[in-house]
Image (tube, rainbow, N blue to C red):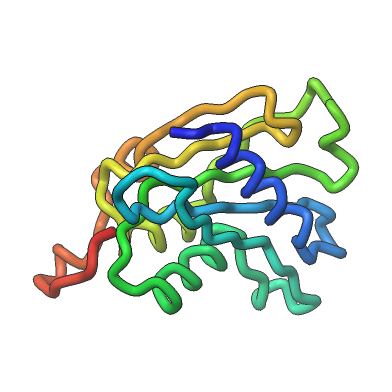
Length: 153
């Protein structure tokens, strides 16, 4: 896995975040698994806030909606996430890793296999941690519980 490229894609997505209320910018990049060598295709998402708050959407769900609607049937290799206050990221050693929120974890579960790797980066990219979806959402509920098929990426 090319962690540097994954970080750069997620960080670039973070730069497009619309977060005037929380000022907490998050970027996400999903690497599509197209088989073979090469740079691969990265699908980016940024968090988008709304004055009503209920209309906000996380970066992970933005990226995944694009994957599902624009790249239907293409498997996913991994996801990278970077987030923090907009003022962070200028080499701030205090940056922390962030993980997907609960609703994003459940949203990922709808479409990804339990072994799907999620890489969480600090804002400056100096640290990262990889966890699988199963580690982030153990004993999860999903489409298989409803005895309906779902495309697994």
